[in-house]
Image (cartoon, rainbow, N blue to C red; front, side, top):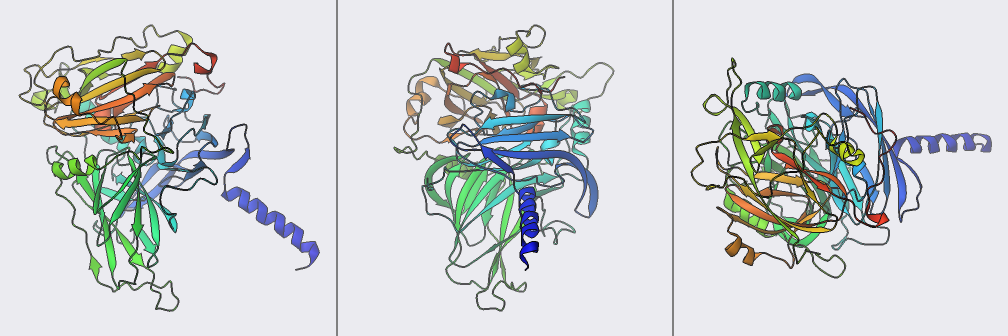
Length: 581
């Protein structure tokens, strides 16, 4: 190429590279600053032989991958081009002193209105692994979600052998109907919402669904190589079992925290959770292809969850063919055996295997002494049917859900803004109960009165308070597992069990040495879970069930962590472009 043509060509290639990757600038932090542009757009997408318009980020479904290193700063400009108000949540990011960037609508911010924008600005502090991002208003996260991959700092290795390749696997749910219509209709009549029509892997339903063989996720591997699968459950309402035929999975990380590695044929992952596993391909070309499958774990009544199975395909590159990358579609197909849909014994045994590394480099800093104890009942209830209306909930009522019998009502102004400006009057009250006001046999015969109260209440705790919280499931309308997600904090799962929690007996068995550290935990069906965390992050922090139907019914609450006394223990002021209600 002549020298006169080389320079323009080089400049053009450089411009193309800049368009494909997020911009990066130097930062005063230990890492770099990474810039992303998220345009919220409508796009026509076809699944199950039907086309519908969905909300997307940058026209992608699932949305684009965000990649950063521990210590990096992320600056993500979100521009809303759709007719829905919307906000984004960076699920599992600690958001230390950056509560304004957390994202749940009407909790830390008002939603971004159509035609407006907002810049999320936060730093990844002390975290590495797999997290994710999603819409955090109504049911828009049905299609607005994507992976958030946090790599270790440069020069810091994984505490396991470096994999040949890393692959995100995101489970989701696909509705033929518009999901905003689905939840709106359910709330109007007080009934359970219609279930999804398919589960998906990376947005694809796969060959077990009608008209979907061409929409199948395929994982292509080389014999003898080890792959890191970054697994995310972005489903709206279903906990999932997952397995790959004739292959074992080694769990090494959950919710962006390393764990003591263990090998399993099947894993369980609730909505909101992430799990990193190592998959080592067979040393020799197997002359076969393998299904990977996911289907629900549910103890609820049939018809309240999507009982279908999603499948993807694991294919081996054939080293003996020409070209070597060619794949034979006529090979025998092997299928995995998944637990039955209500197999709580498997769920329990699997969860019990999760332990923190708890070593010198990655310690388990479990609070050993507790300042505040809380006991929250979580579960379903009912509200009376309004006069002159027909409702389709239990016995003609409306389904509801509550924490300590308080069904949370979203305010019309963001809680964090109201707290920061001192204008909380009429927005929220600070009297969330620390224990149920009425005690009953939580996992036995339901009480006569199943009605819940409603309100916008928060629990106020001082900065640096060590908290122990027991989440007790109830059986008022049947026992169900509830995956609870806490914003702004990781917590340690120090205990769990079935039946009613007994503080005298059960607390003596708590694991205070190497309990698993997470941001989302399943409250066992008909049981309880105990968690501990240090409230070292000022702000208003949402805590809610990650089954979207239950959240819509009010299974949520908020913690208000006050500023500390020192200058570096206070929440900074809000950004100038904070959305207004």
